[in-house]
Amino acid sequence: MGNVSLTASSDRVNLAAEPLLRRPSTIKRLMRSPSAIIGLVIVVSLVLVAIFAPLIAPYDPIKQSFRIQLQPPSIGHPFGTDEFGRDILSRVLYGARWALFVGLLADSIALVLGVTLGLLAGYFGGKTDGVISLLTDVMLAFPYLLLAMIVVAVLGPGITNAMIAIGIVYIPQYTRLVRGTVMSIREKEFVEAARCIGLSPFRIIVRHTLPNCVAPIIVMATLAIGWAIVETAGLSFLGLGAQPPTPEWGAMLASGRNYMLSAWWIATFPGLAIVVVVVGFNILGDGLRDALDPYLSHR
Image (cartoon, rainbow, N blue to C red):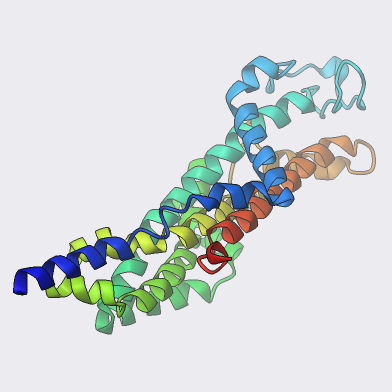
């Protein structure tokens, strides 16, 4: 009788951990959202441009030619040239590489550390939760860009340090999200059943708690990539991120701000690139949120 009870409890644990990961209707729901499709197209386009930038860029993004400096958009240079005669279109295309790299690396840092802290705080509670929540609240007390500037000031200017700084800044977002989700899950029957059959806390967290946090984590990760791109561009604009002559969108905005009245194209096109990419990630994240919503899945 005891073996039957344990077997039933084990089956209940496994069944409870599956819904958020196995939803046949998720892709169909995502494809029914026009905004999500637009966001997906923008994100896929960014990835393709980043991969094939050397093949589709018409010119070397850092090669200077003072004979053609500050030329307006034309057939030869669709986005014009900057104060050093560099082709803006080529620099924007290569900038997609930095945008994608920055977004993914910074988001990965925040995701790994934030999810780990959130799982620990939400599952164990008590002093563990108190310490982690205190650190999270302290970090959230600072504006994101200000906190990133402080981190970069400690590490030193540069695109790599800027990515690390942005990753650190967004750790509290993941921590609070996962903590709240785990706290609502840890008292569920399947978690209690896992404890009753003698599973270790580590196994319960990894195998039965984390899978039920996947949906909100995916949505947060998608949105955070866009936020990371904006924040890193802001650091580069302030001279704390990418350094010349790196073709990074924020650095291009910084170099073009002195020419807004005489050569508007220098700052306009990288600025538009940032807007389009961030909007793409945001609406894709919204579409994923609707597709992965556990309540919508039953409609």
